[in-house]
Amino acid sequence: MEKEIIKLQEMLAHQGAEITELSDELYSQHKELTALKQYIQVLEVKFQAAVDSQSDINLPQDDAPPPHY
Image (cartoon, rainbow, N blue to C red; front, side):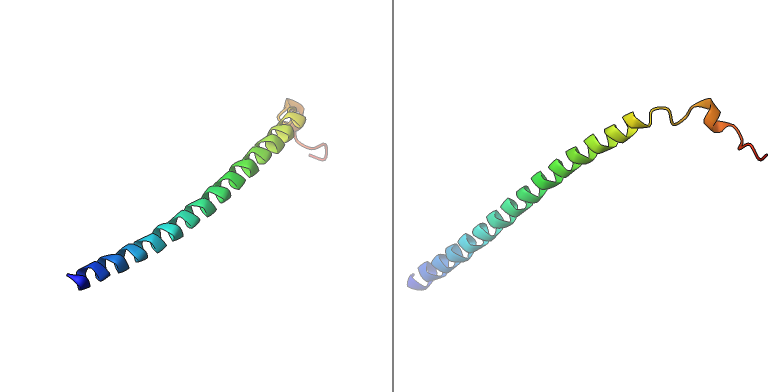
């Protein structure tokens, strides 16, 4: 009976260590995901600003052949 209790205590200690490791990894991934979301928001703002500043990019005169033709 004593050996079984010691074995259960060892298993419990290992599981505690694994839970701590998984929790740390989850926290790390959460921080990374938050940073990536913020980066995407910055890119969206920059992209929208670029699109807005070049709204006349497809005007018909731009499709005309160059004058040397």
